[in-house]
Image (cartoon, rainbow, N blue to C red):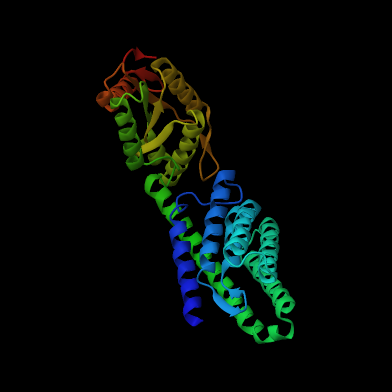
Length: 361
């Protein structure tokens, strides 16, 4: 018996870690697309059926395993949709693969249905972690008490302590492991975001910008992308802001400038802080004339915004922008073309947009 329980726990641990790899980058929640929640439910349901092959036989046609814990885990991730999918598969597996329709299989199926419904309700009711799990474990134990008394009568008293202890410890263990994996996934997502995000402006950083630019450049070479524009942006006289108001004020200006840039660019464009007061925007599938319109919109928004400083004062700033577009400019010259146009904007008076193809816009 001990060996079978250890096997169940080992399989459960391995499955939790393995299944976690499929949603480590994009966690499954109760608001995930329907097909994702159904897939999670099916995976946990099939695994629950597999656990029955390694169950402990307590009495005639009465087996002990952790199948109901898979229903609890499934409902935790995908809510009632996943819970129902898992429950259906476990019920079908218990009746179809382990003895057909008997008193014990019908009771086991009823238990699974009760736990599945309860966990679906609990997941909608409890947003906190442990209230959900402790409620689910309690329902699980009540269902087990009822089923053993129904099937074994007074003989159930000999098995209830073992059943309840194993399920309680198993439930707490599964909850702990899922909590650990959930926290680990959150830390992974935070680190992944930090690796590609500028800490001050919450825009893409230089490394992330290079990665995205290289991907788009490859798409251009493979003719999957026929138009690609780039806007180079530089805050005019930013050094004076630091010298006059201090570096804390300069950081506040950069933060707000990043918000203006993100808000003004198209939702699917890539806005990045390249370094210091230098920024860039990648615009896939954006013709040159449209890129010039976006650049002018950015310039006007930057000029119109009042930048709040830590001491309560507000200031105005302006920006110079340079625009280059493939195929008007060769793809491998986009960066240089935008830089040259930006230099021209600065040389001819700042607070303006210049084009690598057409001079001042």
